Length: 152
Image (spheres, rainbow, N blue to C red):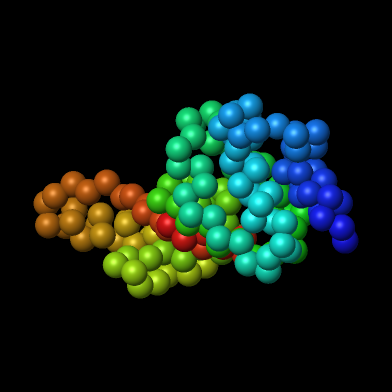
């Protein structure tokens, strides 16, 4: 495939057709982020690493881009490793999640499995704490891993 064709193809993948002649200063922050993804996709990677790709975005745009990245993943033939500290983002983006602590994987599973096990663990801890006379609020802390793979 010729280089110009590949450029058009990846710009279409990230929904930036017709933006190929613009300079970075002429693009919005979200468009610049899409260009970064397009550059990564240009060489047909089998593995795509996304380290906190939505971290600098406001919540409204983060929600929009989350859907865009999920859709993009469905259109490319690559595993995506998605690193985030946002548990809701991890649950929304990941097919599989790995919970990490101190650089070690402590738990893996689907978002539902992670949620169920974390909730059971938090409730068991709450019961144990309650039995000792202290009130504990159950919580879920997740770091994620996806095929699209997300690390939280």
